[in-house]
Image: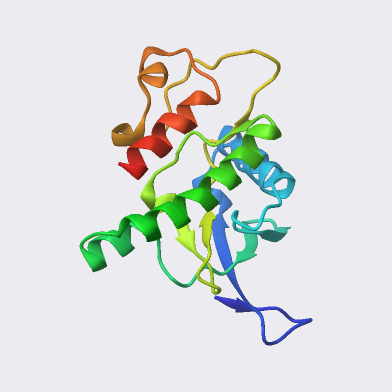
Length: 172
């Protein structure tokens, strides 16, 4: 938890990453994640404000989403009524559509990666597995969370549709 120096009323989340725990390939993946987070500017995607790269640590300054994630909401309430679910999912679909319009595939859609901002709005987070799809290429590496993973990912040939499958599982 941090405070914006220019606006003391704005609190932010700061993710602190110890570089010593990362090999060179993992740092390249992290740089790619940061790049993608800068590209996707949407009201239903948690904002990435700044990154500070020091000798031993990387500090990622992001929008604070203090109202938990969708998984916790389901557990806390026991269920979500259809009206609330449709309103949440509509906004997540818009965020995902924004990503797909930029040829970015999230690849890890799950309730834990849908969080709620200070304003209560759902926000898509965690672009650690996200990739850019070039033309009609398909991907072959198996990444994501098993319960939400599409058959195409398991079989090793997929594109943007893997996110749609995962979102369908979340909605169900």
